[in-house]
Amino acid sequence: MTRTAMGFYHPDGFVPAWNFAKRYAGPDGRIATLPDIVDARLAGMDGDASWSTFFVTASAEYYGVGADGRKKLIVAHGVGPLATLDGIVDAYIGKPRDRSRNTDSGRITAEEFLKLEAGFYGEVEIVDMDSYVEFVSANPSSYRNKFKGLQDPLLLARLGKRATEYLQRHQEITKNWCDINYKPSFMPMIINNSEPDRELYTTFPKVNSSYDYSQRVAAEVPEGFAIAHLLVISDPHVLSAWNEDRPFTSLTSEITCMAWDSNIRLVGVPRDVNWMHSIDEAPSAEKVLREQWSRFMEPNNDADYVPPRFYRLERQGDEYFTRYPKASNGFVMDDPDVEFHVRSVEVVSSVLPFDVKELFFVRYSMGQIASLAPRGANAYMIVHVGRPNAAGWATISVQFYQADVDTTRRLPHPKAIQQDYDRIMVGIDG
Image (cartoon, rainbow, N blue to C red; front, side, top):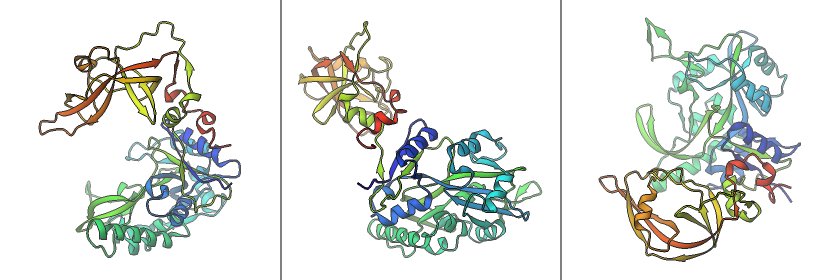
């Protein structure tokens, strides 16, 4: 059976996401590069997983000084100092950081940059900084339609060998969206090749202590180092912005540089993967605990366990579970995790309302629940959250139950298993 590529998001950040993706890919597999994502999107349809989310890739970008003394950008897909976990960790958090500029990029040594340029690690794309500064100066906006994208040397290096095909497909998807949802757009803005605006590579010269915004120059390279980071590509999303002197609304994706504390989704690519299959999403700890709850149940060894006055219930398919109790009886959010399985429930009330002031984070007190609860109720379920009125108050609707809760066994918190690849991926990998 052909294995598909699989995306791994991890709440604990880059390192476990990388380890999970590498484990899934296997010894002969790899972490997807940006050209791999291009391949997946060209093989798929608009709306497939490959088009519907962001990906951190194993494509890396470096800015430094070449052997000839000229500043250069080097794009390396799956090779180079940032092709291994150790190299990435060292670059992002092991090297001295430049706090004088607002950047979360990593660093490699100048010697490593020269080895990249010389082809020591493998094939790379090199963009001369002088020519790139000319292009950015002539095209100050980072938004690219297909025509401008084909002229952008850095964008072409980032997307790889199928850049022209990808820009054409992206334009078709965006133009169709504009024609249906907004207004006809002959040449829509499809990619925000955004890093020049963050001044990683280009900046404005200072003249008499003030910036001259009429021209751009190459940014300085930290002495003895080169700037280094992994590349991220987003899903196409609705964007309303200004391009030079005109507003536009389009379906636009972004290519950006990864910051260490960014959200992470890496794709494990087994050997000989068939890109005609969409990229699957690896299950989260929260998902497997709910869907495969019976194999995760653990004895409740708390000899002093006292049930709460009211359990909050959650329904998953035909099963009911209780949530872990709130952190306090005050106006706090609910705990999102499920704890006990419920053997049976009996409805003991109609749907009853109460009001909350803050809707984005629904905070209510157990006192509000107790004031509504009928005799015999030991559990409740939130069945509806209304829209806020002009004063900002929203109505929460609840229903009360008599629940037979099995407190002899409980589910662990997701944090207890989210580092355990084997428990999460059972039945999916191997």
